[in-house]
Each structure stands twice: as C-alpha cells, then as structure tokens.
Amino acid sequence: MSPPRKAPCPDMRRLNGGTLVIASHNEGKLREFQALLEPFGIAIRSVGEFGLAEPVETESTFVGNARIKAHFAARESHLPALSDDSGITVDALDGAPGVHTADWAATRSGRDFRQAMERVQRLLEDCNAQQPRTAQFRCTLCLAWPDGHDEIFEGVVEGQVVWPMRGDLGFGFDPVFLPEGESETFGEMDPRRKHSMSHRARAFAMLVTGCIA
Image 1 (tube, rainbow, N blue to C red):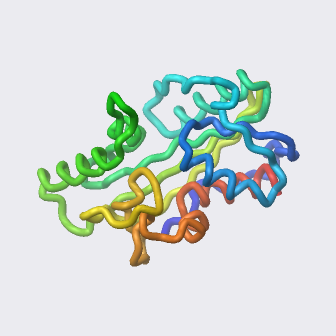
Image 2: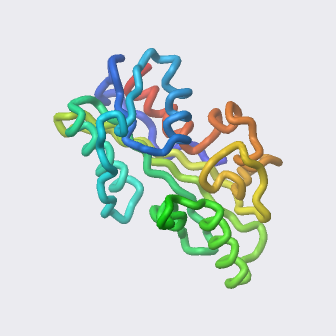
C-alpha cells in the first residue's frame, strides 16, 4: 500500500488538549475519530451539537472542500475544528466519483450508498473495465483554528473495487473496496483493524505526529 503523501513539518501548530470540533454529521466518521483521538485526552464535539448546518462544498479537490468545512466549524464554534473530505477514486472511471462520492449516494430521503455502489458497478460494466478494477480510498484532513490558520494531511490506501458487495461492518463504499494485499473488504474487516490501516488512519497518523504527539 502507498504511504501517506505528506510528511509533517517541524513548525506545524500544536493542538494542546482541550476540545476539538469534528466538522461532520456522519456518525461513522464521528465514531472513527472518537476512537482515534481517545488516547490523547482530547474532548470531541460534533458540529451537530452547535446546531450548525453543513456548508456548501464548492471546490473541485478534497483539500479545498476540507478547508471549507474546517474553517466554517472553527469560525462558528470558536474552537479548533477538524474536517475530513474523503472518497473513492476509481481508475477506470477517470477518478470518479472522487470529491462527489457522497453526492452519488444522495437521495431525497438521505444518503444511500448501496445506490452509489451499484452506480459504480454499472459504469464499470458499461465501459468493460478490466480486472482488477483498481481504486483508491483518499482522505484529506484539515485542522483549522478560529484565527484562520490550518494544517493539511493526506492519506491514501490502494486497492480495487470488487463485486458483489461484501460485509456490513463499515460504511460508505467499504463493502466494495478490497485493500491491496488483503483478503477482506473494509466492509468485512474488524473495525479495529480497518481503523489501523484506513486512509483516514494514515492521514490521522501524520496529524498526530505534526500537531499532537
């Protein structure tokens, strides 16, 4: 698997305990961040606790959208905020769905990732994509402060899209993503094992090295 893309710099701003706002309403992401941050004594609050709606994501990159979410949460809560912009990029689909991963799951009644996974599979079949159907899970974290400063961390896990869906332990596209060198999809994998190797965990490891540890 590919290593994280950005190494921490020695002059990064430190996060010294206290409370950190997670700029997400996604329960799966909140649970994952809680598990990752628990050892460092950092209290977590979600943007939902502040009654904040999700800002409109107008950028075409993971970095741009992560910045929108983190700076909005930090500005409105007056606390440091951490955002995550992540998704799956499928090589045979020219990197789609990418930053639109969540949009592909959007319905009038909420997000339906089964629908999104079926769409990916249909498009791969339509273009006769060769096996293995390589893909990447990508995560960009933005840690922002109310004064406008931020730090960016990016993590990538290489793998492939498989079909049919396998497992119900994850969320999002986890049931169709088989990490490189593994026999279980993220949807089948024990959550503790997934958390130790996921794209989010890789980005988070750099955040810890640069801003917490």
